[in-house]
Image (cartoon, rainbow, N blue to C red; front, side, top):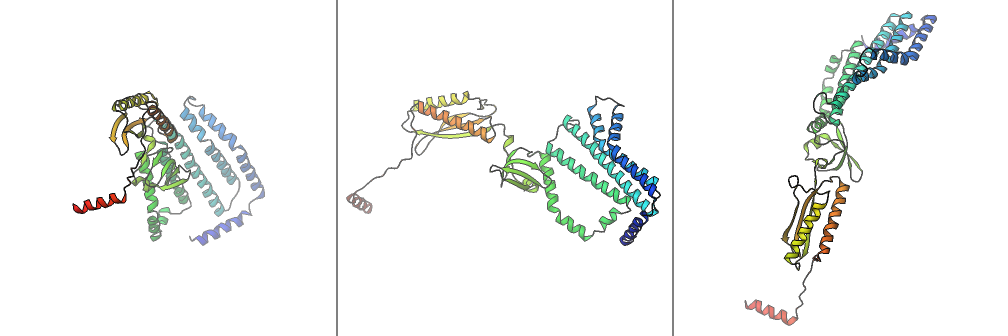
Length: 376
């Protein structure tokens, strides 16, 4: 049957609808109105009745019943439409259309209720680790969204079949158009697989501070196609997941400690014994700070005379702090710099400054130097 003939039949049904008995239509209207008014009350009554049949202390069971409240209300409303249709003598074509529409609503309600049930089960399983190790929130969200898409696709295909539309024949009939769409969606598929790779490998999660080749900031959301990252300047950057999956990612949030490395120069005029005392006081000071990691098995703490630089002795201070976030880390670094500077000041150790020696020579000296060079 062509689309034109179906449209003609539909208009024919509408014309026949005007011939329905007025009394029957009024009764049907009352039934439908009652369904709208009573669906909330009846659905809650049904759920409460079911919940009394078992153990009320079972939180999962209670949550499952509560999740079905709205689908049950919609079923009650659909039943009122069925009852109203049975009370009215509908024309044949209109009766077929009416029943198909109601069957479509029942199918929709079934899949809707299924999704609500699976949502509750998945949440409980995720929170209580019923299936082993708890997965990340982002991976759980990705799987849940994928599950929703698949279920709604099945619902759409089932409803189309109720209307005698062959979905597989329709998809197969797309031909070259389908191939063109598939080629155009290659980048989207790459990003989806990139998102899945990030979530499965747990490269980073929402709230982590990461650095990639082109961006650094806090992860705000991991989507199907892109990841949103908030930079230090508060600008929001969206990076394709395929690019992030192939990039080298530094996850600062996974650092157990954060490195502070200082190179301090002191004057060459400082006697060796005083340098030794400065080093000892610096080590003692760093070991006294609670923010500094002093356990050598976890992280090294090094305070040593490193080298003889251009302007003075170089002291290396190499240690780690338990503060990883930027602001607390900066506070610890400032505190240690002030403390080490105070030690240098208390020990009367001078800090070197870049100096330049300027030698002034007279014209006679330059002539003598030139003659000596020629003689050589």
